[in-house]
Length: 474
Image (tube, rainbow, N blue to C red; front, side, top):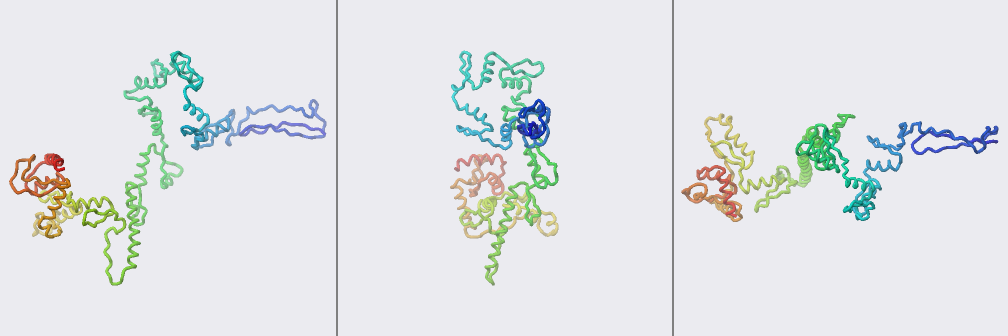
């Protein structure tokens, strides 16, 4: 019984190839020229055979370890290098500096960084030039430094008919900006076609270059993705994407009673949704109160908007009003307690003022609408002031309430008293009894002089007079 050994070459796959030997036993005579343990291996043809990398046959390459990340064509000859590269996709930085906490993708990067915490005397490569005490970590850095001592200028201007050379790269950039670019150009220029932007640092340039990426932002709204199918619409800037969202996908209320009402901003939608929440809470309260109602008693009157959410309360003594927003409280204070009337009738013969816009609109409809005046020719077409409900107590009738309020405002330096008839700084002194009117705005003072004292001044002179008196009052 004899034996023979045969060398088998397995197909090339990812990883190292191993030779496999099979021992064949037979009873036939041995071939001449070979003993039991002598054999001649087959000639290797691995250089000419393609290699299977990630399911693809690649010929004539030693980089068998290819990155499988979408859109990345990097390949490496060692698995360790591929592992280091994959950290750039995953964001893992396992190598952390114990001194400052900075992290890195590779251990070699950490070692290079750790040198920055060591003193300069630990650097092994010292400059041999006189009066130069610089030291370096690598021989390459030392050679570059010595070339600078010898006057080497490796950075050459690439512009046509320009023979300037420089020792430092930043000097070449400064030369291009001042000589070969428009005035005001900064060292780092954008090379995108049609873009003239330039920046002082490379970091700013890299940030700007993202603007030219047409696929930087994509709309992720479900309706947009469903309409486009496999084709995704991209936007180069965040502003363009936000404009698309505002126009094509505006904030929408999904409540059944709103019929997909849209809003210009998310803030408006949130405020609107708060109303629905308050209405639901109010409905639960009303249902509970209805169950507790005693037969024969009239139901309590419901307030407009309900009782839920009235967190803004008026702090004026004797006022129990509460509101659902700060804006409503401010409007109430200005109109009810400060007496502001910002809405003025535009008709020259009227000039009646109102605290709310809807009251002015009602006044215009009733008093100045041509159709209403033509219905009855017997009615007087002269504008009459609308009746105002007043609390006719003795203090209001005698003016004592107004005098007390005016005195408090004057003591608190929140108002000025009408100077009539001594209009110093505006015109010559007038004749007549003194005026007890107080005001806080030049606009109110000017209208008061016109309506009560028949004195007309221009806006600029009255504003200047009031501004000068405020420090005196204070």
